[in-house]
Length: 85
Image (tube, rainbow, N blue to C red; front, side, top):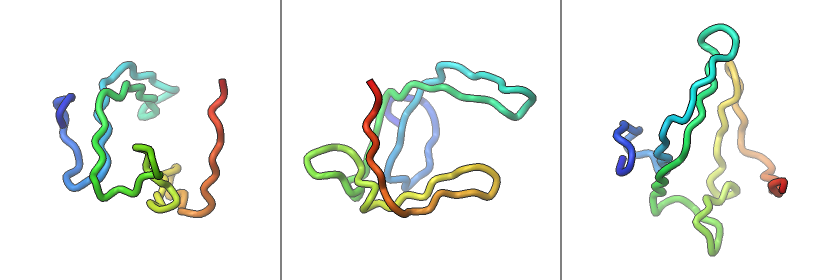
């Protein structure tokens, strides 16, 4: 970690360094929404990037997403959705 004094997973190809902005308890514990501000990003040179950008190419990376309980989102169709506003 170069901007935040916090540990990270060794060998991880992408690291987001964040500062805690706010914690919001949602109902009863352990339901807490954590809001942070990204102050640093490190990407390993081995990560596939989209041509001409510093954005990771999801079609080449095939990421797995964590949902809830035992649920995971597995690689499949990648859809690009424009941000509103």
